[in-house]
Amino acid sequence: MEYSELFTIGGWGSAVTQSKGDVRLGRFISLVLRHDPSAAGITLDGHGWAVVDDLITGMNQHGRTIDEKTLRRIVAENNKTRYSFSDDGLRIRANQGHSIDVDVELVAADPPPVLYHGTALRFLDSIKASGISRQQRQYVHLSPDLATAVQVGKRHGAPVVLRIDSAAMVRDECAFFLSNNGVWLTASVPWRYVIGVEIPNKSTE
Ligand code: HQG
Image 1 (cartoon, rainbow, N blue to C red):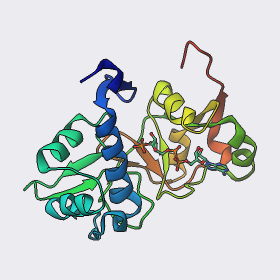
Image 2 (image 1 turned 180 degrees about the horizontal axis):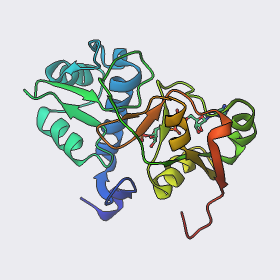
Image 3 (image 1 turned 180 degrees about the vertical axis):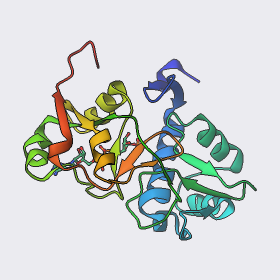
């Protein structure tokens, strides 16, 4: 494989190098398992599980050539541990990030006292007015560290990171869930719990 075909994706933990083909397949798997199973002509059960054989067949029927070995490699190499297999290995689901209504049996947990939400500067006025809301997803996504939040924010443009007083939210009985891949999730974050607004400079990016 040519070096030019490879690029590195920053993420949680160490960087992982994936081929462009794997990245494209990964994006499609994410679309199917989080947002639109019909894109591969499959259905998910109420807990977000797809049958692995159905996913592979469906992807191939919808122009995404993949075999089981490739699927398992893409899942294993995923830089954010986005997917899990069932214990018997026959089903697969996304750990979090859904826009469709499935119950992935998230674990309720007490978060660290401060969490971070990365967003774009252009959303700030709207967030100040109405708080951080879940938009198309099931939950607001929060990161335990600033660096991850910067990366999340950059997906939308010039980033800004909001520092969240999660300890106060817990005192006020807001529920938090921890996904399998370390993302903190909550229903919404009213503006009063934002205790800092940080515009990252190059050294924190
Ligand atoms: C913003 C990625 C205006 C919110 C990441 C965000 C994450 C508002 C955008 C995961 C608003 C929604 C989720 C308001 C919130 N007015 N804008 N009142 N409230 N917003 O993609 O958090 O790579 O749905 O700040 O790493 O960016 O997919 O959410 O900017 O964990 O695994 O509306 O997606 O993970 O954008 O990202 P998103 P997100 P994966």
